[in-house]
Image (cartoon, rainbow, N blue to C red; front, side, top):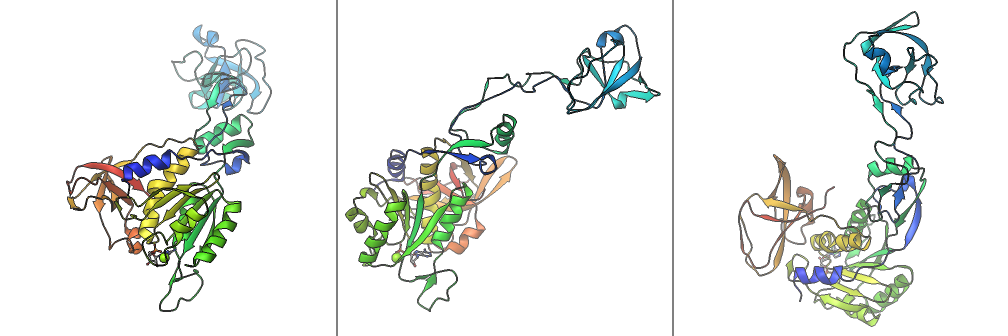
Length: 396
Ligand code: AMP
Ligand code: MG
């Protein structure tokens, strides 16, 4: 049996090396960038008019001129116009190139235009006002984004601006989620009184979906032969294997034995934690295997505490560890790390975690009432309101 800290360090010491793939920009949100991206032009690429109004040469204003003949219009999307007379004006629209010869923009709100002449109604005008100067935000050739960056909608805008319709990102490992158990039937079946519908694989599949990853589902019965046969087949096409159920001490818990027979080296079995004690982790040359206990709360918690960080770290992401403040005193005596289900609320910028332990690792109905798990350390049994602990949220 290993501690949670040992389990984590073994897992994070056995990352997988992702391949790189090119995907369409529409699919890139949430993925991890596998290339550096530079600006192909200045940002902005020209002196950009930032207000609708008129463009003038500031000198004219400075020398007291308040009335300007309007020579023409410079709209967004038009090639650059030129001020023919330096004491005239050109009407300009937001997003247009600043006309040659002009250096100051005065908004429509501050002028009156009548019969082709613009009268300035304000006393204070600053040179270069209402202009977004070329290259102010970023110069051509400058690095905009680095490999390992998680792409959010903000980065999508940058990628689109530099003309990247295809983006190199790290590829997720091909993932199979395999539930095991003779008592389990599929979601659209009517269970006999001794059966239940399987839910773990669906929950895990949805959890992967939260991070834009697709995993395929399988089910295997508690039979050593079929487990071996099915796993062999699955191993041919998948790199990350997640099993649920069959890793405990029951007569029909064949998973650990079968995995080792298939040359998956056990790196640990059993973690001093509650829930999720029977967790098994191992590796072969081309496979990483997490075998999770079948109790739904354990399965769920092990994913967020161990699999998700493994996957993110493998893709080059170092996510900040979240913490939350225990909002009510709590007791847990055994020397096990306890993953306490909590409902969090943000109170004046502080994330407060209210215990709602539920009825144990089989009580997955309780998950609907909570936000995540607070990790309470093994060598403490009294947990006081106000103490801060690591927090694993499953709601995003
Ligand atoms: P096991 O880890 O196989 O001993 O299973 C522990 C408990 O979790 C048993 O009550 C199982 O019926 C239940 N269980 C196992 N797999 C699933 C699943 N995929 N969906 C729902 N419950 C499950
Ligand atoms: Mg079972």
